[in-house]
Structures are given as C-alpha cells and as structure tokens.
Image 1 (tube, rainbow, N blue to C red):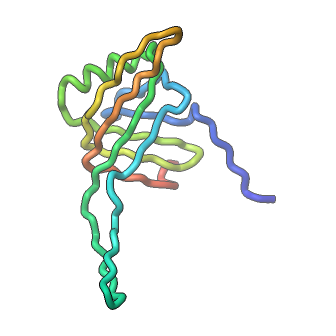
Image 2: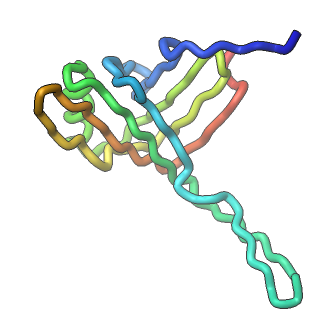
Length: 137
C-alpha cells in the first residue's frame, strides 16, 4: 500500500515574533515564495555554461484574511510600525515551514464592500526567506 498523506488546513500556523498566531483566514490563505531563482545559467556561443549563484534571500509571504478576522487590526498596527519582525508559517503533518526572522508588511489590504465583504490581503517581504521541509517534529 502506498504511503498516503492527508492535509488538514487547521494544522497550518502563522506565528509572528514567536508570540502571536494569526487567525481568521480566508479559503486560500497563505502563500510563500522566494523572490529570485537561486541559480541562473548563461550559455555562451560555443556551448560553455556559467552558473550564476544569486545570493538574494528575499521572499514574499501573502496572507489572506476574512475581513472580520481579529488579525487584520494586528497586522495593520504592525505595518504602521515599520519594524522588523519574525514570521514563520508551519504545517506539522507536511513537515514544512517557511518564513524568516527579518520581515515587514510591504502592502496593506485594499478595502472592498459590496453584497459580500471582501477579503483582506497582506503582503509581507522577508529579507532572509527560507523554505524547509521535514523540519518540524
């Protein structure tokens, strides 16, 4: 029998400064990605290849919250301070985490109201972004 895994979004945790857990997520609630490729390749006319190592560790985390989430006010206050904070997104069953220890909110949400209230999307830039798998016990 294959090694079957299961995913429960309730096992996802977003921790800021190791003391505040973000809550009130919308349905597609967290994304994280490195801003640049770690290596780019250049090929010369004769087929020679150079691997250019990119030392950038920049990354972006996007958090989508329900408009009624208590974390909207928390993240808005954090954005106004323009102070560094740590952010880690972890999922225990998958054994993955991503984030870093030097982050700032780079874009606060747009507001929208209609027959339904829109989500609130925060963009967070991480200066030392890392993605680790199989690191959570």
